[in-house]
Length: 416
Image (tube, rainbow, N blue to C red; front, side, top):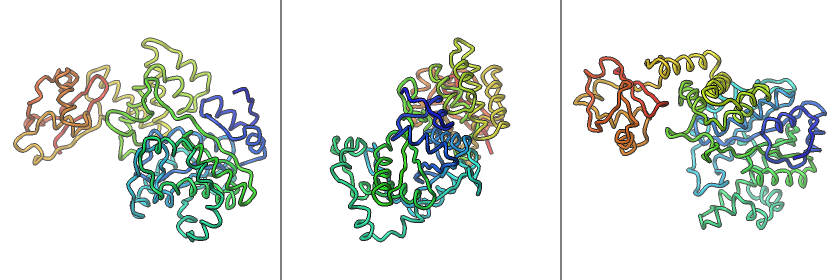
């Protein structure tokens, strides 16, 4: 890419590695030089919390606001009822309106950490597309909006094509999703003057549809910008771990576990992740990312502190680092480890060590826990755990016990 941006926002997007593609660099750049411009990212309410996979786009909204523009977080109260089929092998389970609203409430807690909401020119606003989608008249919608969509073109989009090529069913309900998303962009332009939709590169087809529809129906000039779909240097999808999704809500994943996820970043990813997930200057990110040997560990701690500080606050980040140093460097227990609290009834008659490993989240199944033990990957109070048939009773839990999976994952087990 040889384009040299003029606006602060596009400059940041390019320098820090957020930009995969843009529908018109020059025109978007020029528009952003004219003052605070509204831009949006849409989020379907499929869970009670956002996860690490959403964090890159949340940071894009944060930089948008820091460069004087107006972020719109669009909650998919309407589109969640349909489900985005993009690159999925199967249809999403349908959620009730009550579940969707509860999920939106949980997700709002995260956005408030990264964006300033209010009435000012660059203050963020949160909207719900149920506001305009729920009241649509089906026949009017087909006549006024549906006629602008070519089935041939929709079938050519990679997100749909890949599903059909694998001969996996694509319901008519899901097929409508891209039309609804396009309609969202048009409505946001009409109601709020929104000029830009951002999203992951898997959303390119949906974004282009919205641009075309806005131009055809209300003659509006709008743009699209996508971020790369992130994988770690070993090819894994960003945000997936052995223990499941890395949630952003503190009640679903403790600040310590969140901190530890970033501390465990592979060496090759440190510099890139510092640019994407922190606000450290680019040259500092590059300096830290180039460190080698034991020094790269301090860069990983810096990454974990910066990312955790943005989400959970500086004190939570400092507490997580203190716990990690206590656990790893001094062999202690630490105050902030993930903790499983059992009742006397839970351990009446004893509970197997395999069950405890699973219940504490250190393994996904009994089979995985047994393999961990047989492969010498499990420890009990920092001593090798070799007996998969070991039973733990109430007397063994008179003081909390520490379970470990490998060198970096730990949990405390205690009686409540």
